[in-house]
View (cartoon, rainbow, N blue to C red):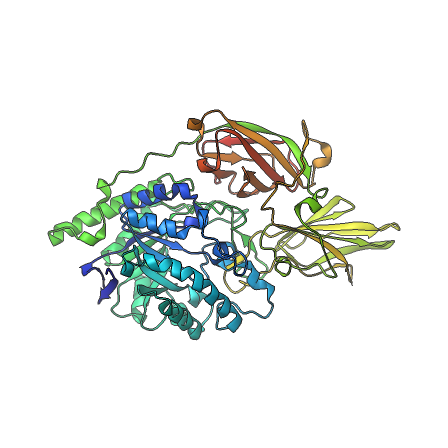
Amino acid sequence: MTVLTYQGSQFMLDGQPIQLLSGAIHYFRVVPEYWEDRLLKLKACGFNTVETYVPWNMHEPQPGVYCFEGMADVEHFIQLAGALGLHVIIRPSPYICAEWEFGGLPSWLLADDNLRLRCTDPTFLAHVDRYYDVLLPRLKPFLSTHGGPVIAMQIENEYGSFGNDAGYLSYLRDGMVQRGIDVLLFTSDGPTDHMLQAGSVPGHLATVNFGSGTEWAFAKLREYQREEPLMCMEFWNGWFDHWGERHHTRESADVAEVLEEMLEAGASVNFYMFHGGTNFGFYNGANCQQKHQYEPTITSYDYDSLLGESGEPTAKFYAVQDVISRYRRSKEQSNGSKSENNGSKAEDMVLPEPIKTAAYGKVEMTQRAALFEQLDALAVPVQRTNPERMERLGQDYGFISYQTRISGPRERQELVVQEVRDRASVYVDGKLLGVLERGKGGATISFEVLPQGVDLCILVENMGRINYGPYLRDPKGITEGVRHGFQFLYDWTIHCLPLRDLSSLRFTEEHGMMADAADTPFFYKGSLHIQDTSDVKDTFLRLDGWTKGVAYVNGFNLGRYWSIGPQQTLYVPAPLLRQGDNEIIVFELHGTADAAVMFVDKPDLG
C-alpha cells in the first residue's frame, strides 16, 4: 500500500522523500484522444504528478442523471496517467472555480430559491451526498491505497475566499472518509489571514495559491502551519482572458525565477495551468467582483501556460524544464544519489511527435436557417405569465427567447428588463432595436406602439455563470420582469434554446449574402471536404467579418466567438474531423459581411 504522508516538512511516499512537481491538466478541456499526448509532455518536462479538478456540472447535468463518458471519463484519464507513471492529485470539491461555468456547480441548483450554496444548508448537502455516492466509489479504486495513482484529494476549493462555515468543510471531509477515501486530504487557499483561517480544516494539510511573492506567501502559511510541507497548490504561471480585454501573457524568465524560489525553499508545486485547453461549448465561466462588473471568460483557456491551447510546447515549457533539470542535478550531486520518487530526468524524456496542423482555407456557407422561423423546431414553447429564468424551466446553457404582444396605441417609452443575464437582443415586429448587455450601462431602448400593436421578442444569451466571488448565485435569462415604461408586461411565450442538437433545423440554399440577414439571427451551414485520412489535422476556425455567435463542427460545439476579441480563432482538434465532408454550422446573432469562414493552421489569441 502506497500512501503519501509527511514527516515534519517533508512529503514521504512509500517511505521515501518526495517533492511533488505537479501540473494541472483538466480532462474536461481536452478531447480524450489527446490526453496521452498532454500527459507525456507533462512527464517530459520533468513533472512527476498531474492534478485535475472534477466538475460536478459535467458529471451530473440533471439531478440524478450522470455522465462519465467521452470528455467526462475521469476514470480513464486517471488510469492513463497512472499507466504513464504519473501520480495524480484529484480536486473533486462540489465547487472548483477554474473559470468554469458556475465554478463547476450544476445550474439546476438555482431552480430552488431557498437553497444556499457552499454551506451546511441541508438541501445543498443532500445534493452533494447524492453526487458523492456516485462519484467517490468511482474514484476509490484509483487511490494509491488500492494500488492506483491518486495520492491526494482536496476537501474544498479556496473556501476561505467565499465563506467561514467550518461545519461545511468538516461535513465534506467526513463524507469523503466515510466513503472510503483514505489518501491525504488537503485544502488550498490564498496566502492571507482570513482565507487560511476560514478555508483550512484542522488536522489536514493546508496549501496556498499564488503567482509570485514566494517568500511572503510561504511565511504566511507558516503562521498557520508550523512544520508541515510547504506546497503551492496553484502556481499561476499565466492567466485567463475576458472578452474585450487584451490577451494575458507572462515572461518565461519570470516564471522560471519563481519556480526556482519554491524549489530552493524545499516546497512542492502544482502549476496552474500546465495545459489549459479549451472551454468548449457553453462551459466558460465569468467574473464579477463588483455587482455590475460582469466579465465573461473567452472560449480559449490557453492561459499562456507551458503547453499552448492546442498542446504545443511553448518557451515557458523549455524554461521550466531547464529549471527542473538543473535543480535535480544539483540535488543529486549534493545527496550523492538520485531520489527514486522525484520522477525521471527531464532530459531523458522524449516528447511525443508534434501534432500537425492544416490550413484548409475558405469554406463558403451556402445554406442558412432563420432562428425565429424555426423556434418551434428547436424547442417546445411554454406559456408563462412572467418571463421565467432558465433554471426554472430546466434549462442550463445557451439562449432563451421571450415573446409577447403589446396592444396599442402607446406613446414612446423605455423598455426596461429587470434584470437581463446576460445579453439581450430586443426585436419589435422582427426588427432589432438594440442590445442590452449586463454590466454595460448607458444603453437604452424605447419605442412607441401603433394602434395595431406590436410583437416584442427578447433573445437572451447566457454568457457564462459567475465562477468566483460573492455573486456566485447567478441565474440566467430574465430574472424578474420586463416593463414598457412603468407597466410590467405579462403573458409570454418562451423557447428554451440550449442548442445541443441542431438536426431539426431546415436549411435553404443561399448563394451570396442577403441584405435582410443583417442583425437577424441565422444559422449558416457549409461543408469542409478533406480528401484523405492523412490530411485530417488540427486546425483553427477564423471568422473574420462575423460578429458574435457559436460555431459547430460535425455537431460538436466549439464554443463562442465574438469580434471584440481578444481571440480571433477557435481551436478545432483533429479528432473532431473526418475524411470526406465535415458539416460546419455557425449561429450568428448580428449578420456577417461575408458568409464564409477560414480554416488556418495557427491560432490567433489576440
